[in-house]
Amino acid sequence: MPSIDRFMVAPPQQTEPPVSSPAPTPNGHTSARTLGVIAVPAQSPATATPANLSAAHSTANRTPAWLLLALLVLAGTGWLLWRRSHRLARETDRLARQHRALQSIHKRLRNESEQLRQQATNDPLTGVLNRQAFASGLREMLEHLSHYDQSVHLIVLDLDHFKAINDRMGHLVGDQALTLVTGVAHEHLDSADLLGRFGGDEFLIACTDHDPASAAALAEAIRGAVETEAARHEPPLPELTLSMGLAHAGPDTGYSADALFARADAALYEAKRQGRNRVVTASDDPPATTSRGIERHL
Ligand SMILES: Nc1nc2c(ncn2[C@@H]2O[C@H](COP(=O)(O)OP(=O)(O)OP(=O)(O)O)[C@@H](O)[C@H]2O)c(=O)[nH]1
Image 1 (cartoon, rainbow, N blue to C red):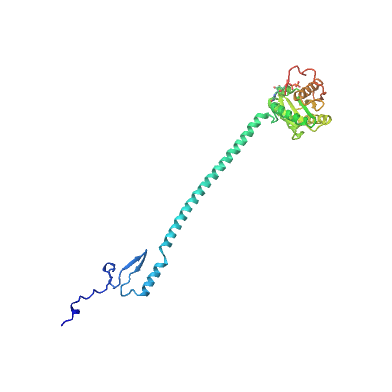
Image 2 (tube, protein in one colour):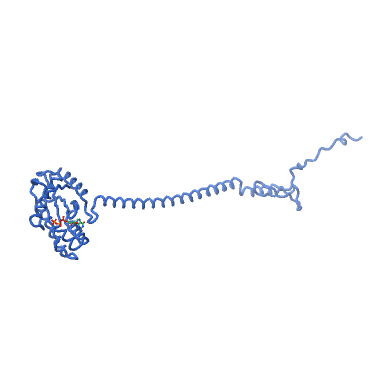
């Protein structure tokens, strides 16, 4: 009697699931399959020994995906930083160019403003202060020194027979005579002193730090030096001489600019009357009338 075991169905063999088995290659191994991005030979059941599996595993571990990703991020960040620094360098260049351009505009404007200031305050021929600038400087000087009871001396000087020089030698030489006078006067003055042109052939000097004697000596020194320089001038200007009126302002006379000018102008008139080419010092009394019959103001 056959035993009942003969009729029992044998249990199926345990095999690899067909879907997960890769197709074998001609050499009997399975084809390479990828793990991440690294190709790892797939192990046939016959060759998938623990040693082979560990080798494949270590090959995959050599360059893991996260490292590649990190490298990619680093490279991208580096490129972005490079692009940004390149842009910054270009922007810095542009700003530097703009800065240089602004500096040169600033310099030009400063020069132009200095030129305008010069034109507004200085006589174009001789470069000394014009009448308005001189008057304002003199008023400031008087106001300042009045606080210390100090003296201010004013010299009004006029070229003698200047019309004759112009007529005989021409206006160009006449101009040279005017600049010769201001050049000589300038050499005798301190930086705090004022030199201005009243108009035509008349000039003004205001100086501090003088007593009446030293102020008169200063005026005399300028008069004598003009004579000397006029003789040396080419062409020589033997007729070029100066008449000068000198007056002072102090605590005893008061510090009025107009009163000071009136006294110095009266003294100049007296110098002309006495024969020219001389210095006359004014008395501290106000002149009785305007010396030349017309009102003259600073
Ligand atoms: N070359 C030149 N001449 C000028 C200038 N300004 C004024 N003058 C001349 O200066 C002369 C002044 O002459 P006047 O005021 O008559 O006096 P003066 O001939 O000097 O005679 P006194 O003052 O009496 O000694 C005039 O002939 C003006 O034409 C100038 O800038 N250049």
